[in-house]
Amino acid sequence: MEQKQEHQPVKFTESIGSTTYEVSIHFSKTSKETLNDKILWLIKNDTGKQ
Image (cartoon, rainbow, N blue to C red):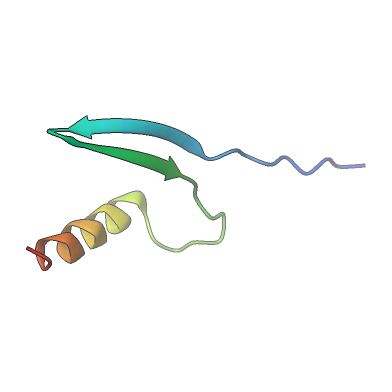
């Protein structure tokens, strides 16, 4: 019988200036986007908010 292996998300905190970010990372096995695609999406969406 095959056991289903569940992965816990990676969590960390990062302080930049006076702001502390709590980051939780997990990846879908069925996603068609790469990590690079996701980071570029975050950058593009964040730059439009300034």
